[in-house]
Image 1 (cartoon, rainbow, N blue to C red):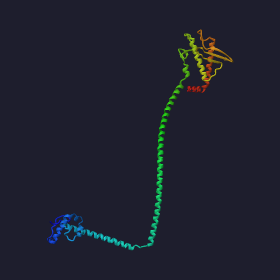
Image 2: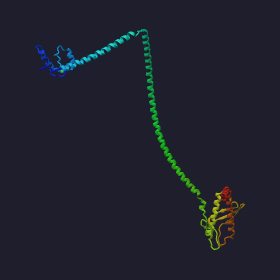
Image 3: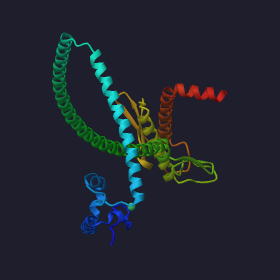
Image 4: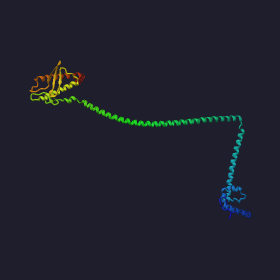
Length: 328
Ligand SMILES: [Zn+2]
């Protein structure tokens, strides 16, 4: 069997002129090589072609051979072109070198400058490194301080919240106390509005009779009122006059009251002497004419007048005000 093309593996038919004995032996030998190691040919075909001593060592079909020749020719042209470029560049460099004046002194100075510059830069680098270390230390210190400040801030915030809570509680307490105070003030106002004397000594009129705490004081011809009731009413009046006198700090001159219910007395003082008149009646139905009782009634009226005088003196301005308003 004939060997195949090393590239496309198409079977190759050799020309008759190649089929002499020597070539046939060689072909036989190659055939076995080609079969066993065909991959080597494909892997490094160009090397094989270059190294071969006979075209039979690397057999190629006509098409592949033409293609390879064409590729190689193209590659050769490229390489020649590249070579020309390199040559041109090399020539240019040579020319430049020739034109460049060589001044050993200036180069030495330049070298010195560069060395000096290098030294300065190294010094600067050292300084910058030490500066960097210093700044890093500073950053660490500041971070530590910031952390401390944060902790302190947290603690203060906690305190603030606690204080805020306390403030709210205090406000609530204050509000509650204010409400309580307002209620108390209202109560005080209500209590102030209450006249104790009015409540204790309720003076009124009942069927033509003047009464004090429901006790009739006096009598009419058509109706007899018990002395007990009249006497008790006198006692109430005496007590009211005494209380009023104490309240307005009136000092009774000439007379002294001794209220004792339906058994009260009026004492007339003259110097060191005191005459006692009973402020209660008994016996007959005459309203006046009992001499001692008449004296006692006069004394009582005298005391009432003294209280009235004191009240007028105390409420002089108020009275004027009342009169002024009434005139309007
Ligand atoms: Zn081929």
